[in-house]
Amino acid sequence: MMNGMMQNGDRSRLLHRIQAEDFALYEVVLYLDAYPTNQKALAFYEEHKRLLAALKEEYHQKYGPLTVYDNRNTSEWDWVKGPWPWEKEAN
Image: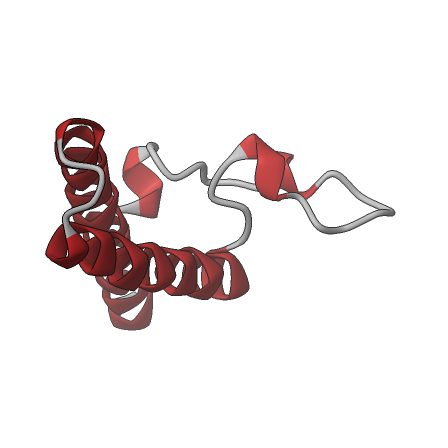
């Protein structure tokens, strides 16, 4: 029981980190729409885009697909193996 609770806590923390990076990227994209040559914003975008990709890959390796588009198994549809990221059991 304790191990499952720790895993859910780790999963939840990882999801929160993914959400935070996704939010940061969305915000910098809005900024870049107005200031497309700002070098600091461009560097921030590139750094956090890489970090988000790494966090999503970590999630996929540990817990399975994060979205329906992340299925990598060509012989089985992994997405239906639960719980889904938004379900309480996953967090």
